[in-house]
Length: 121
Image (cartoon, rainbow, N blue to C red; front, side, top):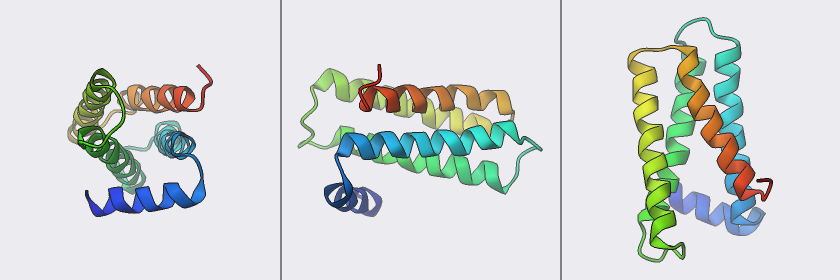
């Protein structure tokens, strides 16, 4: 398990339910991306920081989905991996060809999954 995943695991045990923490992290990432989109002035430090935060978060989800001790059914884990791969591709595309409109899908994914984790769907 990566250092980030281990830190996340330790934190989740001491601060709240994992689903709640995951939802909060996704909403935080979505808010950073939304701030970049709303205040767009071209690619800048804030864009790169927001994309990095989101990519790291999805890397953790990807790693967790691939572990042998993951309790989720295989089809759920596969869906998480597919979404994570899409997020990674969108992130690279945004870095290579910055356009604030490209952030919409990342924001939407994060918000929708956070709502599902929080039971608001």
